[in-house]
Length: 137
Image (tube, rainbow, N blue to C red):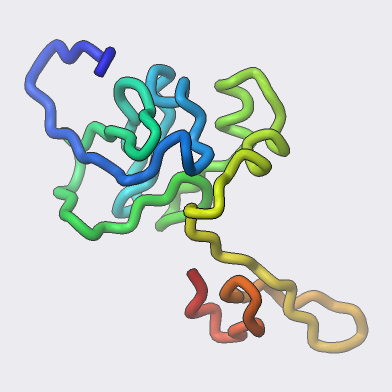
């Protein structure tokens, strides 16, 4: 790990890395992930199969908590544009780099006649839309 801490810190290891399309430099740049609806900074270098997140401040985290790299959790959101700006590239390069091991949740437009779009619904990859907004991974 290349990050030097000035005081004791709590860290969480996330089983995703550059083999999944997470750019290596994001850890050194302190890019955030979302855990429990709270932004948490990556620390050190993203390795092939894991990244490290500092969880010193904020609510406790536990094994099995959902970690969002790109998307919304609670009131917070991280976009591909945010990562692209940090890396000096474009959003499409970020999205195209995501590997097949990375879980995806597709969103589908829900329309109720006359061409009006009433909202979005989760859809499991290859599945039918779930109008309740639940399901999908």
